[in-house]
Image (cartoon, one colour):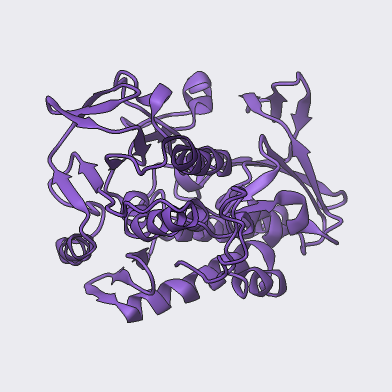
Length: 405
């Protein structure tokens, strides 16, 4: 292998997959094929911002643009359906077979509705750029058709996505209401959470600070509550019917179904995550990283980036005949936005919220963009973070010029 170019196939165009490709793009003796069923990279930390009026370019970036002038990286659009690890081949939905010397599987997770009747049909989400477009169209079309706000805007899930959206949604709705010349301005926003506290993945101190902020913004919070069903007119929560046409589902994820459908090729834990060795591998030539792997701090963008850096280094070590070092899983700092210039920050035992947290979140976005596109392109997007963008012709009126979050 030292005398030829090694073929590294990466499947998944998220943080982990893109970062591995970028790390390997500057290495000699390697050609990378990055496979994704989407044309765009999804910068998930900014999806809530796009959903509340900011530019789609913050959260959706063409994958090909991330590898301009990277001749050793090829992008292939396709969906992975099976793997034969003994033959080191992948099969795509198109029927094409792709051979690899090393493969990296970083397929991400999918939305789960837990079998709740009506949720998948009637609820909205912000888990993808297309879902954001559908939600925004609904919000604006409702003002056009009904000339009024919804009775209730209900967000299901008080994790980071639900909390950051809730904190930004009220001001956004007030803004577009005024643009549509709707005079009734009362907005009712509720968060439904099955756990006993908001931000259950963070510390109790962080949860308390977030809850205080939500209440200050007059957002209703229902903890220890379970969604039972949804119709086009209401949401049933523990027998209580909430009249609403706008339910936003931010809870519920499960591992990519590819792994379950290929379970003879992988060992899965009780959550459906792939069990990997100390080197993030299922064999000497196949790595599983990011959200798909049963490793500590699974599900965080920063953890995915760290997995990617480790994996690219491990691949190069393998090609050079060097001994691999076990992967490490340090604690990751978390910053959850709580409205304009506000956020709650947690790293180990350090927890605080307010303007300083908001500044750290802004800085974290610059670092996040830099990790996946390089600093020059990252700075160009980051400096335009206050741009306001709408497809709605009413809201494109010249009077809307100022940033909302």
